[in-house]
Image (cartoon, rainbow, N blue to C red; front, side, top):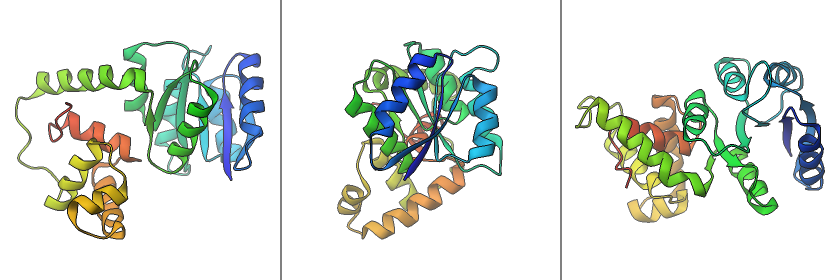
Length: 218
């Protein structure tokens, strides 16, 4: 079961999400939070696997709450940002705060459920309507810092190969086929990659690679 906490200041949104998610056999809605501070409190109390977090809430917003949750060593939780606002700065801030995914509330039910299961599986997700724009933003910020990739990359050659193929959107099985290795070997290198760079999932690993100049955002 994927245990989920819903954090949104609008009661109608919380109720609607609870109905949609609660109807799924593999999802259990364990609580509802009315703002960011409440989300942090309930996460520490209920220990959900995933928080569906709105951004613009009174008091502590969703980005600040995400940053607090990701910094707590006693928590093992992922955050999926669900927001009405299509603002690049919000997307960038949420991902840098540690969110594992970002989805606009206008997404259909199937897309929402797929995003939740992707994040819960450690793969991350980014709304397709935002992907090209956010990758361009990461690319521009990278170019402002440096025009060349750092020479002291912490990755091994094989971890770098895995990172490049992750950026192409390949699954572990597809990466294994490309590298002529077993999927278990890919998992091993992926785990080492995530640990070295402090990323929680595949999406954050790719974004780290773009920021570091190791992955071509095109």
